[in-house]
Length: 541
Image: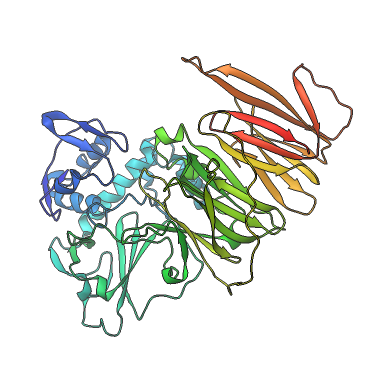
């Protein structure tokens, strides 16, 4: 479905077409190109298109006069993007509204008997299935008879006093009293416009279901607000390439934050991690750069949800790097290690009060320097970009800043990587009271190791894919045992290294096959890993 030149109304219907993969452009029928590349310069000057599954479109067409509803269909789908060229925020529906007639049509009427909590869980695991797509299409049909006026209104955003989806905007000259505007965005686009007396005071609350924009009155010049059918969309001036967004309605003052690198723009997409609510962080690495970050919380204990948001191509090559936060431990400092030779290469440094220094990222640069971002307590802030790596990481000091001197972060001497795209991890073996070994459920090879120490600290090695891979636990181990193996990657002559790992609490023990090497729990364990290879070495002075 194509819009007119300014995307305020329906223009024409085309297709059906084969849907291109995310990040790709394909040429369809009649010379029409379908593009899903973010920040595409050609798309910026081409008519906007709103797409729908052909079966969903037919579902709607069979139940209403589709020709009379195409303008509404255009607005309700295209304006989910809050301004032209806005990023895909990937916001999920927070409330499931089932149309039981759809479920009856699929022969699963028993879904009516399920409590809302179970229904919501089913939706989370099958949100892209045909049932839920038809359910969303049915909801769209129900909205058609009660849709707000198709009258189109365009006014400067600075003139809007208050607005909620489905209502008409309230226009008033109150900028001098309430000079700050907060936009709330959900999966259907802009949900609310609210005036504030100033920038909101920072509170450590965040959400994955909403995105927020905080704009001072002086930044509103040239931004127009379009209203139609009870929906709102912004038109930004040509010199403005986007708006800063947050996952919290009360973001921190950027002047009090410390970032590396400090290349923040007016369209940076910020995300926050409240370390009080977090028991670990998984970083998704590819070729030495971070492509996604998952904070492990009670609500989202597994990083699989974040992994699924990566493109399919990226999923095949990312490495999971897990940093555990024990209940008995806490972060004493957060830093960044900057490469002096590679402008985009950096690592994140954690100093744990009990677990010591942990480095995530950069391993090979001999010329680097450290930057202290914050001492505890803190909120971690980073940016996300469509199909691109994280380029900004920082911290907000949510307590009194400690200005006392701090010893430099510890950086072990690292040899050259044993295989391409290798990540490095290192941890002591003394005083370990539990080993948790994460194994690939198909091959049984070791993916990662989680060490728990007598003082309550935790350290991870390799890929600890919490909630994804099966885990073998060994309590009070006295030996850790390796069995190194290799195989030839399918279709190539490349040798791939992998390792089987076991632990034991018995000093005298045997293995069922030859090739095992056993080490006492002393010294340090060096663990090189990529998305498909591992190499483990015990280092004893």
